[in-house]
Amino acid sequence: MTSEETADDKRRAETLERLMTVGREHSGVTVMFHSAIAAKQGLNATEEKTLDLLERHGPLTAKDLARLTGLAPASVTGLIDRLETKGFARRVKHPTDKRRVLVELNRDKIGELAVFFEDWARDVVEGCEAFSTEELETVIRFLSVMTERQRKAAARLSG
Image: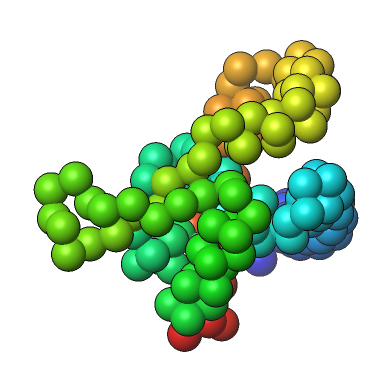
């Protein structure tokens, strides 16, 4: 191994260590941010993020929610019950298969959460101004890979 390869290996190891540290910090701040928003509406972070899934994907079955959240099916049933009780979601018959049930957002109630994200969306856009489009594309690629790996890790833990 050449001294250049050794220096590259050392730099990569140090960079990965910094990435893990920053990633942990970001993860913690993200959980606290979503917990704070959720608390404003009498929700927990899992409930709030499930509403986000329904917002992005449209009505979903309990099985779909289990797959997307990595939660066990029994946990998803309780989650849906809580969201329904709090008025944020409701169970509806599937439009083409009457044996299936979908969970859909209560659009009137979900609008109450939007105000909490408006300032944050402006902050994100402002923060991204410091990065080139190519750098942002790299971040998107990285986050996409890590999201899928974390989804699989959550499923392993729940399974």
